[in-house]
Length: 375
Image (tube, rainbow, N blue to C red):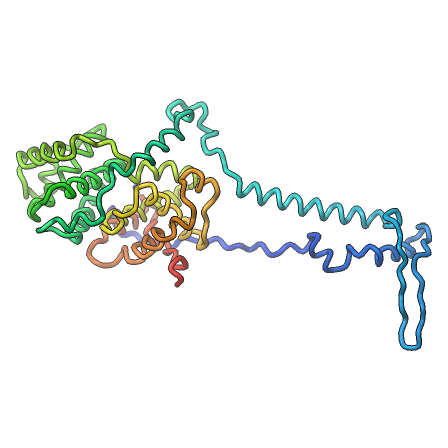
């Protein structure tokens, strides 16, 4: 989902160039086409049409008064009936199209023959993830119990680990699990600042063993830490960490929800990359720990959509599969916009540099959805 600083033009914002429809029945009514009594009199001027004595004119001294008699529908010209029927049909089709746009899409229909997609169980799997996600969450105030480290040190560590993850070319799952291990360990154990980086590299090593096919060597992590720790120290920390966490590695992370929610959003590559840029920026921010993983994933996609299209967009399909309404996402989304806005400034710019490359579609260069902040 690091490297160079290539420049690329900003992402285009699609404009809605469709103007109001001027042929609907409402417009016709405004123009008077539905006033059948007036139209009935036009029939007298049609060549070959029957004469209907339904109009009488009474002249007064100052003006002419037209009196219209009652008539039945048989007196209405056929072309008027056809026009009205056609316009009513157009309106009906438009309503059906609007209803279709708001309907829930079956996002698994194309995977029915793919046994790895487990379509029969996928909804149950994600219902279980949603039910158990709290088991992998930590207290958003756990840092108050640490006496030698703080949230700024945590941010520096995670920003550095995101670069390490990119240099080792590891899978996305590994990064999200490693950061989850760090937070759960720090919630349970106090750590001196000199050992904080050791906690970070050990968590990355454990996540690699759990997720990767080809795992980096312990010596690789020692080297990337500039030999600040020995191999024995890394292995000792590994033992302490797995015992502290009671070997609980299978916890729902934001990544698990991201893939499913992106599918529900019918995303393309541009939306996917921007969503991952936004949520990786949030990994660095300690205050985002108060949101559950599923909400973080949904809000990241919603924020990315708002950034790309510059208007609010949250479909019924996304709402159905995420179980979050647009209103429930707004608080988290607004925080994400502010992080997006400042991602390229300051000292912690690892995520911004990573997503400013062609490999990641220059996602970091997308304009933030500032309208969500009321700006």
